[in-house]
Length: 93
Length: 314
Image 1 (cartoon, rainbow over the protein chains, first blue to last red):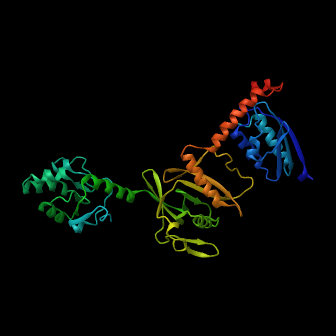
Image 2 (image 1 turned 135 degrees about the vertical axis):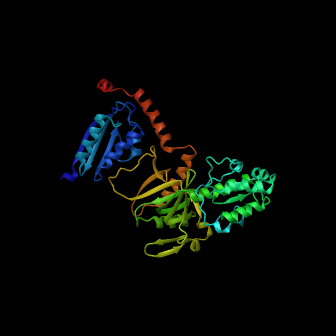
Image 3 (image 1 turned 45 degrees about the vertical axis):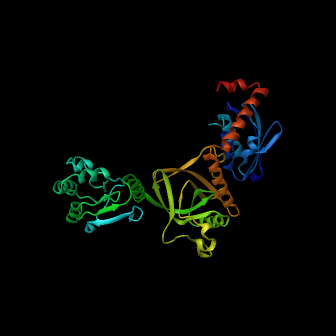
């Protein structure tokens, strides 16, 4: 059952400069720690693969933007928890 | 060893050819000839050029012998006369007595010193040997490393097939020359490579002279690692990792590989991208700047959520 779980969350981009290239890399690298889960990120109806850095860039997620995270598969809950924590603290560490 | 290149002939003191030179710098013993021997660097090759020889020439044989004896009393590795200058009998006599090799070159002092330093710098350069493969890819010296059996030789073969040039496989001899790293093959191995399942292959015989290169500057290291889905790979190319070999820093690319991945084309691309970067163009930076300007445009036009004031406080 756990392998097909879908976990979702809404997050806010707190980084002053939005998700620029470096933050996007940090994000996809964090997501890559969970190889058996898929991740989609959407903003204003534009949905991308959260493990693709080029996809994440096209969100142009500025400071204050609202993003929707949706993970599916093994450890989807951990993946979402990790990312939510990242967004809480700002993805630029 | 460098006799031919430096146009040297041995005139006397053959019994002293066992003597060793410990510095790539030669010395011109003008002041010692006049009697001042403080701080005399006698352990270097002693070069007698126009100035010294002209000084000695205007002396009578006895004073000349005495002047020369001042330097010949030291354990000189050798004495070299430049410009194919005439040889005084006193020089021959002292060289034989003291068993210090006396050599002569037809090169001018300046040219001789230039070539001498270059030749000895090469001999004295710090050296090391690494387990890896060196291929000249579009003129970029690419050092492939990674654990045994990961496929370095196979990639080299593939690169050679595509027109690139093999420098060394498996055993790469490196030496630091000034601030660059030079690579060459092991003399015994030459351009032979071992491919698992086939055995030893002679790349020069198989692919011809265009497929090999005797020496090449190492400009880039590509570390091949087995693909591990969760590992932290470089994703942007904004931050160059660097590797230090013999104190020379070169960019290091960690390349995760798996069966079916076309590493050859990636290696070519790494080489080409390196050339672009050297010429000042970094694709990651350009894209990053474009994104940054899009982000600032977006934050100006986007309606700010009501709770954003909390964010600003953090």
